[in-house]
Each structure stands twice: as C-alpha cells, then as structure tokens.
Length: 449
Image 1 (cartoon, rainbow, N blue to C red):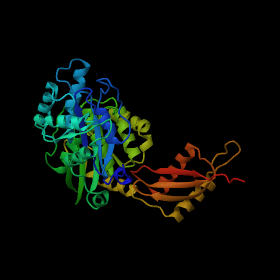
Image 2: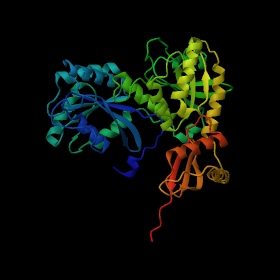
Image 3: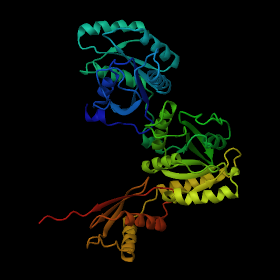
C-alpha cells in the first residue's frame, strides 16, 4: 500500500465491516490481506477464530473497522452454536457484511442458510469467492452468482489476487464518511452522554430534547448504537450523542455489548466533551471508573452528572461523599451536577457546567505567563534531590489546546509526584476546569565530550 492509502482522511465515526463465512473458508487470511499485515490468527484447521475480533483498516484513505468472526454453521451445537450466534449479531450490527465462500467447494447448504440471514438483515453484502488462485478457479467462482447476492469477487486471500477490486467494492458498500473534523468544528458542540447501562442516559437526552427521541426501558442495555440529536439548549444548538451503556472490558464483552463498546469508544473519540452519567442511588462501580479512564485517555472535556438524585437520602449522601473523595480524586477538576433526568430537576445546571468544561479544554496560556509561573513554583518548591541530583524545569510551552498539552524542558527526569504537583498548581493558577492536562517532560540530553 502507498502512504496515501495508509493515511485515513476522516476523523469521525468509523463504519464497521463484518467478515462472515463457514469455518475454514479463509476469513482470517482475507482479513490479514485487507489489513496489509498479519494480525488475525490463521491455521489450516477450521474453527481457530472463536470470538469476534476487531481491527482498524484503511483503504484508499478511508478508515473502517473489520470484525473477524468465527465460522458460521446453522447446525452448530455447544460452543460452535455460540460462535454462530455471535456471527449473526455481527451481521445485524455491522454497516456492511463481507460474505466469504470457498470457490473450490462451491455453494453448500450452510452457505445458503447464511444467505437467508444476510437477506433478512437488509445490510449491503459483498460476496468474496476465495481460494481463486488461477483462471480455472475463476471460472468456477462465477457459479456463485446462483446465491443471489450479486457479483462474486474472485480473490486469493493467500496470494492477494483480486483483493484491490474487492476492497473498492467494500468502500462502495460502507456508509459515506462523515465531514472532516475541520468542517465539524464549525458546527454545534459535540457532547457524548456516556455511562454504564440503566443509569438514565437516554432519559437525560429525552429531557434535554423536550420529547421522546430515544427508547427508554428499565431493562439495561436498550440503546445499542449511538444516537445523534441536535438539541436547542440555553439559546444554542448542541449535538448530543446518546451511547450504549458500557458494562465490561471489550475483550470480555459478548454480542451486543461488544458492539456497544466499539460504537461508544468511537462516540467518545468524536465528541469534544463527555457527560458521564452516574446513578447516585448506587455505589460508584468499576465500570464507571473504566469509562472515566477511557474519557481521560481520549483527552476529552468532562462533566459528571449524578442522576436519580431524588432517590438519595441523608445516609446515601454520606456514603456518596466518601465515594467521591476516594474514587473521583483523579478527576476533582471535573464540574459535577446533581440531576433527576426523569423529572427534569436541575437539568438547567448542565449548560453552565458544559460551558465551563469546554472553556477549560480550550484554554491557552502564553509562553511568557507560563514561564513566569514555572519560575515561581520552582523557586518556592524545588524538586527533591534524588541520588545527589536535583532536576529543574528550564523552560515550558503549551503545545496545544483541546486538551491543554504542555512540554516541559528539564535538566533531568521529574518524579511523578512532582509532575502531579505542577499540574495541580497549573489548575490553581489558570483554571483548566473540566479538562485533563497532558504534561510531556523532555529531560535535557547530556552533552557528549
């Protein structure tokens, strides 16, 4: 692939392509061919791939996610039956399906059973006739027209034959890419509503929108795909993204939950700010902390909404304060609002919190002001001496905003504790409410004599 093919041109939500087929038709080999690198495990025995595994792929400058599935067998039992069920979920939740058939075997009963599932899904299907290594096999491949899925694309996953034409067809079937981020920046602010299942994310969006836009049910996990809604709030238009609840680590998730995580991660990446919705009536859970970590690592602005506040009594309030001190100590900078989405109580407090967090996220400190500040704290609180050496901050600059990112040039490596001290003082001096701060420390290299 050329450099142009490897560089994606879009930064928005990435479409998903599910790769489906009977066991041992060469799905994982074809996935590796699409990726241009060996990532999917390949063995010459059926059933090596059991779970759905996702990979980032790029072709002709367009990014998409490839989901490799286990072999689909309609008569499967036991574990094979669960593998088949996951493949069916992949068909239902992907944007398009790549159906791989072994051209040397021809159409089997199992292939025809898959076709019925594919037709029912209503999603675009690309038919790959694999193991076409020569012209004789290519003639056999055209017998697959009889499946009724349109033109079969003859490919050799092993040797790469025909893979370019196949990928061009894949791009045509996948949804058009969203606008470039530069264009998107001029539009409404993008806010992702995130949290574990059943904390009231969809209820919050409905209340903000002033009507029932999203299905709400007491059953956890009603929302699967992120839902974009333009909402007028506080005299301005905002783009809210309601996401599926994240329950588990992506590797442990199964079926719908796997895709929920995939889509929610994309929504976080696409957003400028995330509203983490917590259920005030329940203890802060490990899943809440995991989502928090995901938002921080993505460098997004953050507001924490404690929902279902009407269910909080004095005793629960006491324990919640302790949980906040213990579990949210790393995000003390995030604005917090107490709300009841069901009734709309204190929903109006959300807009000032969003504004405050976005302002912090986009704050820029001039180089002069930053170095005057750094000089002051180094003089007042010098770095501790370590092994007879005392590193100093020589110079600093803010490399970017969204999130605020600082580069510190130092005479040696700084302790993590001192880095946290610098970050805390930066917040005290310049604000940065509602945003993570990134500190990149560059120790001065020793001069060679």
